[in-house]
Length: 435
Ligand SMILES: C[S@@+](CC[C@H](N)C(=O)[O-])C[C@H]1O[C@@H](n2cnc3c(N)ncnc32)[C@H](O)[C@@H]1O
Image 1 (tube, rainbow, N blue to C red):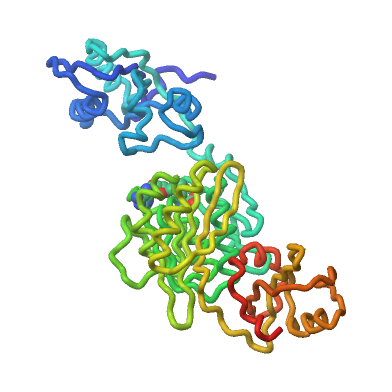
Image 2 (cartoon, rainbow, N blue to C red):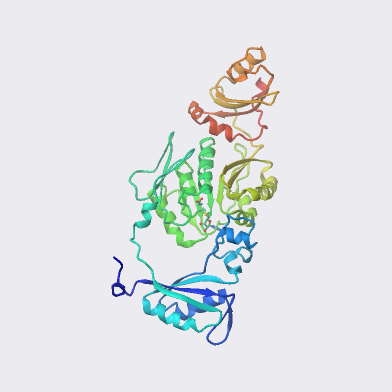
């Protein structure tokens, strides 16, 4: 049964729908562009029931068709610079102003009806939404290679085990529900990177949204995480998400990255490419440089579309080169989205111990590659040299050991595929001399 108007309370939300041209004349005859008009509207009605303004929208394909963007996938962000403010570039925008109560809405509509450049299309009450309706839309999300994302209100405890990581996120808290490809690419990248590295002391999550990536990193073992999010309205939610996952002590939330010379073992940023490029120098300068006993840090970028990859790789590689030397570039893809990881290629690896298990990559002269994990690689290679083909050298062609990484436990064999995917370029011939 439809609600009658008499059910409406003073706190009901009413929308005044407007069509706005590019210039609007104020009641005193002052010409206002659309931003100026919104400011004027706030001054007039901000203290009198105006609760919000939806400045209009443009579908991404429409924006591309109008030549406002090259890509049908980018979004027009609030407070975007002029060249990405596509809604602002439209000749006419469909705007909705939200008022608390009918009389405030009607008063404003009556004033706006007389203005040149502004047409009032309707004044209507918003249907009520049950407070928890939206929650039904979110269920557990499986992210192969990482684990499971659950809504914060589900029962259970966050954890990391050989089966993966279980993380609880309140999806109401800004971007970062875990549903988006770009987030999932980072989660997989973090799991892969952190399972195959020495402990991570410091990680920077730049553009943290709900905090999902930094919190996931803390669950994977990062000792200190800095979540940097420009929107302060999301900060309380990041803290609540960290608390819910039992990592509140590891996670610090800030609006800007502080001046800090120590550097981060991992810097991760999932923001659209134009914003990444705007922040390229700052992001690169945050990556920890090499130390006597450790390679430099790694930089992981996501939110990059196919046509943007080359530009991003060129810019970031050249900035990182001066500080960290050459980087190996590892790319992962989901649909139209790409994640790029820069790893220092000339990093000093930990010397292999006799008891180590070794992830290795062999290349035969015909170009074929064999991978494996073993603790007797020298023996296998000796056998090969003596003409005895083994499982890993079955082609009987001469082989070159192109990459070996010592691993302290055999359990990594379970993650062999992940380890192999993350192999840096063939420049660590650590055991070659022993072959
Ligand atoms: C695409 S979301 C990513 C959220 C989350 N990290 C994830 O992977 O799902 C990008 C976030 O970056 C934030 N952001 C945009 N520009 C920023 C800046 N200059 N500094 C910090 N955060 C920024 C946005 O507010 C948004 O929450």
